[in-house]
Length: 164
Image (tube, one colour):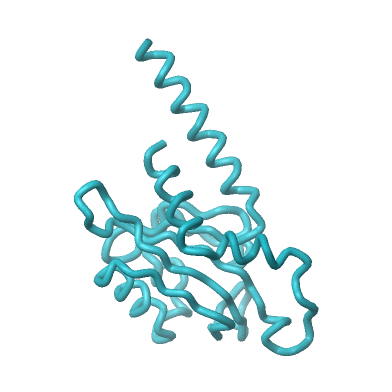
């Protein structure tokens, strides 16, 4: 019976990991005071470019973000236990040789352990650069965008991922 339960748990974890990889939004899970990347999906990786993230602290993996307020926002979520929602927020982010101006809608949502302490942060992000610059059309999937960017959805997925 125990072996069967373990097999079901592993299958569930593999399925959830596959879903995370395919979601058309950038998703990352960060842990600890240095915001170490524990998980990133393919879309998140595409937002920041082909560089190692998992196992790296935020500012070691994405040094161009230093001084742009992201660390402070994440620290605030970690300290307060309350989510932060950013709308069309501007960042200089490098995918290539030089950082470029990019805009994002995103949620930083606390992941709480069994004792009520914040142990990590779930990130759900959408690039909205074209919309912010006035050159893009509204996405064809606004309902999905609202659902995925809602704090409840992010937390639910992060909790399920962590338990797997």
